Amino acid sequence: MKPELQRRVQRYGWNKAAEYYNASWESQLKPAQDRLLDMADPKPGERVLETACGTGLITFRIAKAIEPEGEVLATDISEDMVSLADTTADQQQIRNVAFQRMDAEKLELDDNSFDAAVCGLGLMYVPDPMESLKEMQRVLKPGGRAAVAIWGERKNCGWADIFPIVDKRVASDVCPMFFQQGTGDTLEHSFREAGFQDIDVERFKVKLHFKDPEHVVMAAFSGGPVALAYDKFDEETRDEAHREYLDSIAPFRNGSGYQIPGEFVVARGISGD
Ligand SMILES: C[S@@+](CC[C@H](N)C(=O)[O-])C[C@H]1O[C@@H](n2cnc3c(N)ncnc32)[C@H](O)[C@@H]1O
Image 1: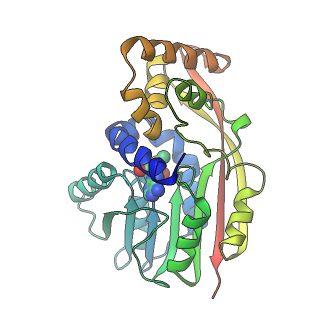
Image 2: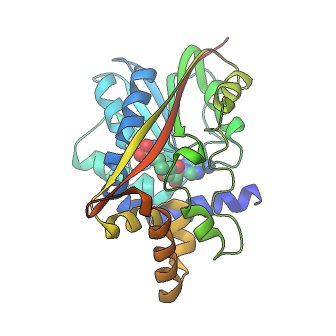
């Protein structure tokens, strides 16, 4: 898929996903976000950048850790994600955050200007993850910390058939390189190539809990790039795709719900001079 098309699929897909995102994914992603924040270790007074911030689940936790004087700039390619996060900040009167629509591969930001940069569950979606890591490195001050969390290997993510199930009903792949960085030691190599030192990588398994078939289907089909394709399906195609997805996760049934295996990889590196 051409990079420009991939960016558009992400942008408009995540616009559709924004309002459902927290209900479907907040608790499922928390273990990866917890570990990401431990690794990034934001401190009071620091200036922190977040790329692919979504609804701000990580942003607001960083804002708390760096208050009162620290500031977080959170960016995302989807304007609906950015505006939802901005509204939440207003409602919760969180003053030390700013949200901007920005491509993670093309940060419109000065060199050497942040103490830490984080990206939670976003690197799988950018056309060129290396470029995105290099951009994080560029805007970090020397000695600044970058931390990234991604999904791990395809074989360890029980929900992974969602991609081929949707792909075969649309003209192009919805997320062509989703598992690339989470495979083997790719992420560590990417961090090194982007100019980071003292790299730490952790890989861990989780179980994703869904209380019933309706919730498991909702989470899978309302997620970002999948949501854009799904929106164009007619009723019959939707039912067929739901059935196929439920068949693919049938081994993970647990009572009336599901316990689906998943794997995350979290990495941290220090920016060189
Ligand atoms: C799974 S969500 C993660 C959101 C948040 N970081 C979290 O942990 O809850 C992925 C986000 O990546 C964003 N995204 C996808 N491609 C992007 C790009 N090229 N630049 C910036 N953000 C992008 C999407 O809009 C979406 O909000």
